[in-house]
Image (cartoon, rainbow, N blue to C red; front, side, top):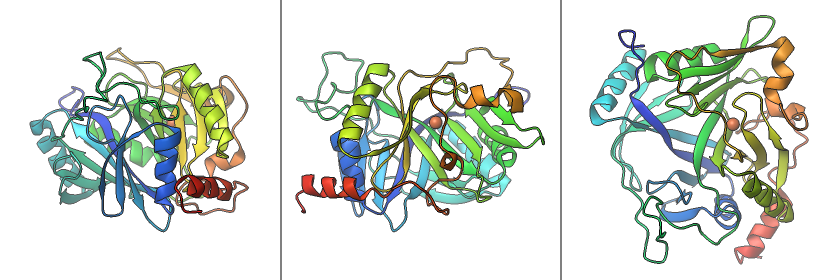
Length: 341
Ligand SMILES: [Fe+2]
């Protein structure tokens, strides 16, 4: 809080860099199966966006030895809001410094969460401009719906595994201005998860406790459909192309959103959101605390339980797993499509 007023200086989750040990196959997953649109290639990276993402890119896929997150990009409310947040981040001791812009995003200030996950904050962006064959008849859509795969609409939220949820939640609240929507408090009073919002959607970021005791790993990055039918269509396509669906289609109690978790060929957990969660308009919203006796409904409201690896598998992965990622069958199929086989 700033003089007892909400900070409201960061507007949205605008971009995300995903590391993949098989970037071509990861690009195949997002482009061919989920209909994302490629907007640029630079060095080892490919830039993509969903058809309702307004900026030039929302996802950057970069070839690396290990899967995981490169950075999460956040857009400030204004240039002055950016300056004020950068000053607050510097005061927190977690600032790194300014980095050059890339693919339509202007200069960004880089910093980390207390657990060491890299974040970027910026103001300047280039908007996506549809070519004549991409243009929608609706002027309020950045482009018309692509005909490839089952096209997801936009980047939605991010979940990072945390060594200490409370420390990361406090940093996000006090320094960045996130507001707590819901959290999990275990019977030993340990905070096991926190879901925080910037504006009205139930959450833009979540920190969940890493059962391995590590911190700073990617649990999942989420993209939205907003419609049950599109999620069901996506599930059909993913299964038919050999992708490993970890859980869903089901609904969490927390956020009430409808989900499907799938591993992209590089091994990162991707969440696809069908029906969106609730929105918050109440300025005096009191965070919802889920406790041991209500935990089951918090995690799964409708559908089957999550596998035990849901609490331990993150990227880069550190634990033995029954998961078959990276999925050799998928990679073989992707290679066939990419013309390498
Ligand atoms: Fe999520």
